[in-house]
Length: 279
Image (cartoon, rainbow, N blue to C red; front, side, top):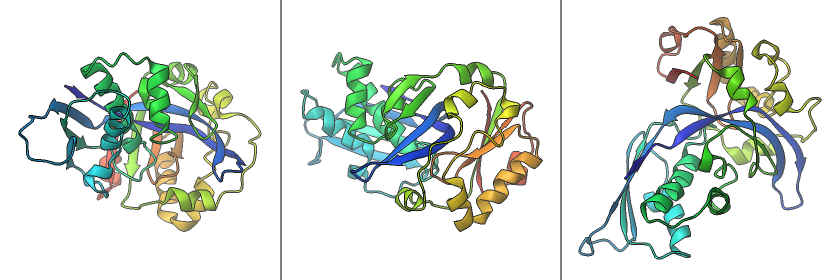
C-alpha cells in the first residue's frame, strides 16, 4: 500500500507566549500544498533476516538521521505498543526538502499512522490518530487530515480554516529552498513572544493583496539577520510578481503566491530547490 505525504506552508506564524515547560504558544494557519513524498508499506516475511519490526529504506533526497530514528519508524513503534502489528518493510521516497519549514518529516510520520490504520484495519478515527500523531511532534496532527487549519497551543490544537482555500483557489505557489539549514531550537531562542495586532486567521480571510505587511512570520527577522540570502530570496519573489511572499515555519524555504504561473522561477534560483504548482 502506498500513500503520498504532503508538505505544508504557514500562512502567518506568530509566537505569542512562552510556556512554563519551555515550549512556546503560537498562532498560525497550516495550509497543505501538493509537494509530496511517497511512502509504501509491505508485509515482511517471517524469514527476513532483520532484528527490527519496521525495516525502513529511504531514497530520493538525503535525510540526516538514522533510518530507525525516522518518524516513520517511530509512528510504527507508537502504534505497535497498543495494537498487534505484523513486521513490515517501509520505503520512503523523499522529495520534500528537510529543515525547510515545510513539515516533511512530520507529514511522513502522520501519514504512516494513517497508512497503518487503513492497511491493518485498526479502526481509529481522526481524533485518535491525531492524539497519536501529537506524540511524534507538534505539527504532526495537522497531517492526519491535511486540511487547512488554524493552529494554536504548540501547533497541536487545530480548528478548521476553510477560508484560505477559497482565497487561494486558482493561484500559483512557488517554493524556493536554498542550501541553508536552520535549527528550530536556535530560531526559537531568538524570538521575543508577543501578541500580533491582528490574528493570522482573520488576515488569511482577506484578499491576498492585503496580506503583505499584515500576515507575518515572527521567525523572519532573526533568521534573516543570520542568513541575509533568505531576505534576498523573498524580495526576488516579489520582484518576479508575487502577490505575497513569506518564509514557511522556522525553516529556510520561502514561498511566493502568484496570480499567473511564475515560469522564471527555476532560472532565477539556480542551484536551489524550486517547486511550482497551481493551488
